[in-house]
Amino acid sequence: MAQPSIFDQILDPANRANPYPLYAELRETPVTRQPDGTYVISTYDEIVALLHDPRVSSDPRCHPELADAPPALEAGLPGLPLTFINLDPPEHDRLRELAMRPFGPPCTPGRVEGMRTWLAEVANELIDDFAGKNRVDLVDDFAYPLPVTAICRLLGVPREDERRFHHWADAIVANLDPTTGTFAERQHRRARVEVELGEYLNGLVEAHARRPGDDLISGMLTDTGPHAPMSRADLVSTAVLLLVAGHETTVNLIANGMLTLLRHPEVLSRLRDEPDLAIPLVEELLRYEPPVQMRTNRSTLADIPIGGTTIPKGSPLALMLAAGDRDPARFPDPDRFDPDRAGNAHLGFGSGIHYCYGAPLARVEAQVALPLLVRRLQNPRLVADPPPYRPNAELRGPRHLLVDFDTVA
Ligand code: HEM
Image (tube, rainbow, N blue to C red; front, top):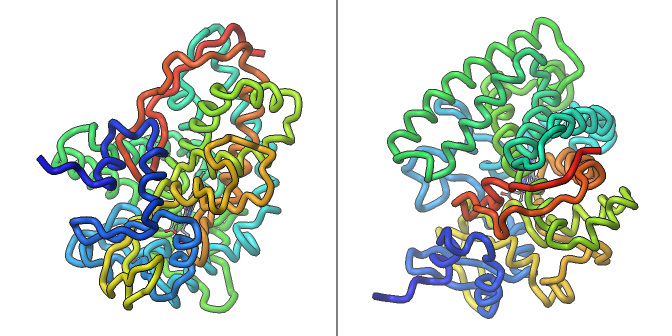
């Protein structure tokens, strides 16, 4: 039998716990063409160049494999317009600007900073629930509920509805996981969730239109700036995008973060004593164990010469962000986890026009969560190393992270 391609090996769940040696092999040839016609790009400079190249499209209607297929979940609900993660300029820029304006420039750090206090309250409440136990699953019991609560607050979901939102968020993530049933079962569940979520969000938009609050949906509804207002359909689509794009990614950042800290006890004890270390530490985590390992939603709109080859027009691309983040040509000693690393221009949030919209929020969530966990869990220990991983090659993170501890402070 033929040896599987490197790309197949990366996609193989058996390599999920440590794909980095495979990425190193891949980087030996910065641009490779896979048997299925996908061009895999694995070196930092080439990835950045393509992320900034207007001849590279994120629109599934331009993607050779997706053109006739139903749009991916991240593209929105059936019957609703594509969201800006899957659009090219000028539509991308218009919708992204409308989604950002209620916060001022980039989903503003200022506004998100205001969320730091209540995020700490939510995180502390979750940790309070660990009292009396000696073992928890940091994925299910902590990393999971925190980002959904954050997105609910951002969108203005009333507190009494948060539980329903958690249910939909769980169902969306479960349906992305190929081990949770047959394809048909997952499609069926997905359709049910989408209908419920779509109906709920329509109702939420109507409620905010009647009585605007201090939240993102109200901000988009009452916007009077250029290109405003956003259509109702775009608004519902954008709300779904934020839930999908901001949920499992943040779960994985927190879970990968605790796993990395437990594997580096000297950094863990430093963080306990110096909570401000969380700021560079989270950046290093986004480089060292990025929740988004690759982007496969791109395709070329023209022939593009790069990395010693010419990628023909109409080719699907796989941009291996996590391989770029370990490229020794860009990051000295790249396999070392070093929160003091200087010039850490990682690709954890992408780069270029699609740079993560929620980056300020994701950063604050992790910067709040990790110091609280290491301060409050006394003598934390990993139960299994490596932990079981979700079988998703694009979004990489543990399915469970069981941790034993003596007491909760
Ligand atoms: C885009 C990573 C959290 C909303 C992206 C991209 C990456 C990324 C790599 C670029 C996608 C591309 O180039 O195609 C992450 C990580 C997160 C995180 C690692 C958590 C640790 C969030 C949160 C939100 C969010 C909390 C919402 C509040 C978005 C949106 C886009 C995006 C809307 C599309 C931006 C555009 O197309 O202009 N994210 N993200 N993300 N992210 Fe995040």
